[in-house]
Image 1: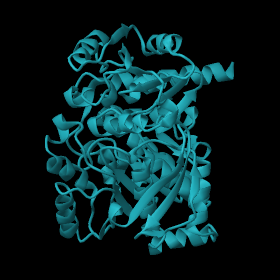
Image 2: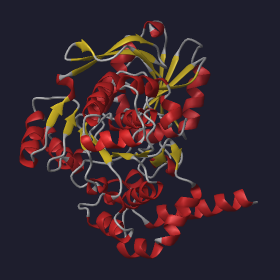
Image 3: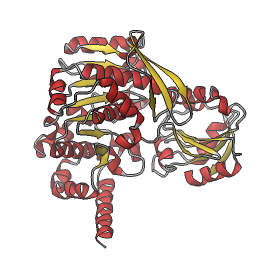
Image 4: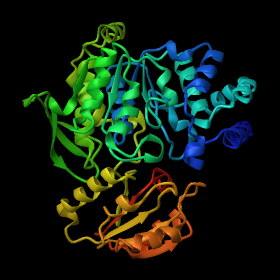
Length: 449
């Protein structure tokens, strides 16, 4: 009875949050705030919790969630108490706020909203602004050794950008959220570069001729040391299956550490690993972080912590939704790729798997309704069988509209009333050796996990 009561109160709290606070992943741009005023006001009301723990700030178009999980796992493997803030969530709001892989408790969510309801009502933050404040409050109360904080959208005006981290990270830049961040790579890079702060080192995952000058200029302006990971680190997939891989990492073309097995796979993770390892390579050298390690008696080598983290990543961090094999016979693979650059890599990788050489590809897909899909749909293979569905959120693109748009790119299939029904249909049609891929949106993937 007590558990039922807790669940009911938790649901009431979520209902308040969803009803009262504009929520980007449900309604889109209308929930995007153009400044940090609300976040700062909420943090001030809470006693400025964001100033009470060290942090690493992670931005980028693709890969920032993976890099954030990798960094969290490595720090956890070193024995640190690690806060992790990511967004959006798949199944449970609490996924956004974790300490050593454990979600914030339902009771703490309830208490935070109840105790701060007057301030929330007065300040009228967006859903995301309130989530960020809740995360920072939780991390401060838990006295985390370090927090890994993923940017929600952009960087300069993102609610997370009130922190002053030990280190900033920008994974890469490609076209996404162009209605809010700009329609050229330099404009988008300018928004991401907004997380670069005075004197704070910054790691950029990928150097690109259009965006590197933007980051370099911002770093010079802020007197922030800048390093491009791909100019020093290179990650090679030594052995790869659909569900896991063995990687070799080179730093300046010399082995950085022994090859290691990882509970991850996917076409883009070699880039994310390079970015994460460049980050920890720098982080481990910072005097402030060395003091944290000393206080925790973290005496093993960084290579040992990296190997331990990647071999046990899902248990340590609850990493999910990225190139995740969720069932066999037929194989069902889900991936959160949703823009041109991410989707291109997904389909290029699938073409190179020998095990899929004679397999039919079945694709369950859906998108949000506020994006230009022309570049994304152009990435999909015409040889696949398609199962179109609308994600169960207000922003979900109508299944019939998606089916019509997809047909213009030679992508044909049926539309289904829900993602679950689409997946069920794909599994019934697929042979045992076929592959069912669920892709196109975080919210579509969320419904099959």
